[in-house]
Image (tube, rainbow over all chains, first blue to last red):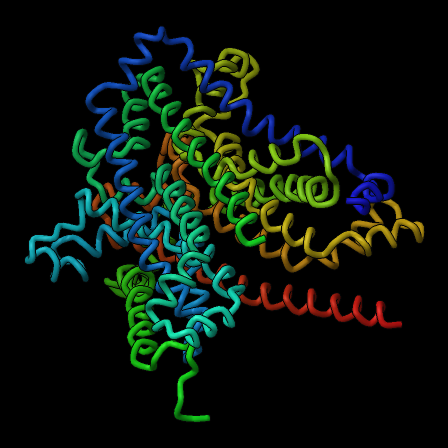
Length: 276
Length: 290
C-alpha cells in the first residue's frame, strides 16, 4: 500500500474532504437516528415492549419480512434468468432489454404503486384475466409481493451480471469434455461460483423491500392485521399522534435494517475472498 | 463451423426458450406497466391530459415545488459526494470502512423511519421544536423539511457512483500533476474533473431522479398539504385517494418521462465512461512502452 502513503503526503484536501464528509453525515444521518433512539428510550421498558409487541405490530413485522423474503426469492429466479440471458446470448434487442432492467430504479415508487394497483384491479389489464381465476392482485398480500418484485428487480440482475461475465468459460468446457451434461455442468460448476452473487442480490432486494413504503401504500389496501406493513403502521400511529409508539416500531424496523446491512457487508467480504 | 454447438454452449432450443422467457419477464414486470402509465394518462384525450397538468393549481404547485426542492438537495449531495469520494478513494484512514458503511445506510433504512426521526427533531413537539418556534423558523410542513428529508434519502447516490470510478482511475495522474505544481482547485478542475465528468454527470442525473421521486420520507415530514407541501409523487397519491385516476396518471406520466430520460442518459454516459477509461488505459500502455 505504498502509493497510498504517497497520496497522504502529496495530494491535498484530505482533512477538508474527510472533515466535510463526516460533518454532513453526522448532521444528516447520525443526528436523526440519535433522536429516534433517544425518543424510544423515553418510554419505560414495559411501554416500549407493549408498543413493539402488540398483535397489530407483530402482524405488520411478519408481513413486512415475509413479503420481502418471498419477493426477493421470486427475483432470484426471474433476475437470475434475465442476467443469464443478457450475459450469455446475443440477440436482437439485448441492449434495450439491458437498459430497461434499471427502470424500477429510476421510476418514482409512487408511480409504480399506482400502476401496479390499477393493473391488477378487476377491470385492469392483468386483473381482467386474473380476478376471474380468483387471483386478487390488488388490495391483497399478493399485491404487496407483486409490487416489491418490481421494486427489487434490478438488484439480482445487476449483482449477478458482472460475476457471470467474469466466469472462466474454459472451466465449463473442461467439464463438458470430461463428460458432464449441460445441466450437470451448470449445477456443479457454474452454480457454485455464482452462489455468493446470488445470495448478495437476494439480500439487497430483501433490504430494499423491507423499508418500501411509496409503492405498497397504493396496492395493499393497508388493513390492520391483514395487509398493513410495518412502515405503514408507523405512519398510521403517527397520524394518531402516538409519537412514542410510532418511534418504537420505527426503531425495531431500523434494527432489522441494520442487521440486514451488516449481513450484506459480511457477504461482500466473503464473496470477494471467494473470487480472489 | 455453422452447424455444431460448442460443448460449453446451450443448445439452440434451450437458448430460444430462455430468451423468450427473459423477454416475457421484462415485458410483464417492466414494459407493460410503463405502457400503462401513458395509456392511462391519455385515456380521455390530450385535452384532458393537458388540463389535468396545467389547469389544476395544486398539481402545478406540486410541479414547481418538486423543481425547487430536488435541485437544492442534489447540489448539497454533490458537494458531499465529491468530498466523500476524494477522502475514501484517495486516502486510507482509520474508520474508512465505517464511513463507507454509513454511506450505504439510507439505502436500507425505511424512508418513513427517516421522516419520523426528522419530525422528532424539528417537529412542534420535537427536540428543537420550541427553539425553532421562538426564532420563527419553519422546517416541518415546509420546504426546508422536504429538502432535508430528500437529502437523507438520496445522499449516497453521487458518492456511490464516484468512489468505484475514482478507485479504478487511480491517483497517478493527480500525483503527477501535484509534482508539476498543481494546487488544490487547479488540480480538481484540470485533472480530476475531466476524468470523472461522465460518472459525475450520471450520479447527478440519478440523484435528481431519486430526489424528484422520493415519497416516504417526504410524505411524513411535509404534512401532505395540497397546494402547499405536496411534491409530485405526493400529488399522485392525493389524486389517487380522490379517485381522480386520470389526474394521477397525468402527473405519473411526467415522472415516468423523467425516468425514461434518466435511463437514456445513463446508457449514453456509461458508454462515454467506458471510452474514456479505455483511452486512458491506452495512453498508460503507450507511456509504459516508451
